[in-house]
Length: 193
Ligand SMILES: [Fe+2]
Ligand SMILES: [Fe+2]
Image 1 (cartoon, rainbow, N blue to C red):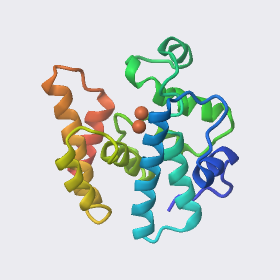
Image 2: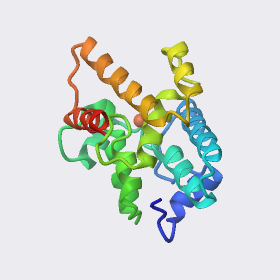
Image 3: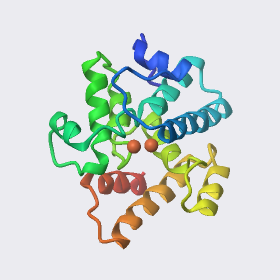
């Protein structure tokens, strides 16, 4: 299990106390979402018997993942290289800011950077964040389907992950929206595993 020897104080504060950095920009309802994602992830990790430090790290990722969700896209665009769509800019922007703050935990940064779209090199942290972000009981779409998937966690981690990636990619296809290459690579890696 990839526990980083010394946890960055920002991750420790977020994971242990739900504290956000001063540069965060998210609404009260979005804050409720991140707290709910952290609680869901922690429920899984308690059930899995994950050691305390790793639980703090994973809760930290949940607390921080949408830290820039409500920042103006123009501001985020200035930070983020590449062709990220406006709605997703908050993810790579938060990873970039955390890295500027001295966070060197690459698995953690990858989980934040790709949390809305997935990445084939996700560790358990990234996969849990991707899943909990979608399964947050506070979100009001696909209630029954998502409740059924929550009920299978954490035991059916791999199968639930596949179901979520499929649902998210299908939702893009059904609205003729582009699918990022990283999502396809994530999907291909999962079904080959
Ligand atoms: Fe997000
Ligand atoms: Fe989120």
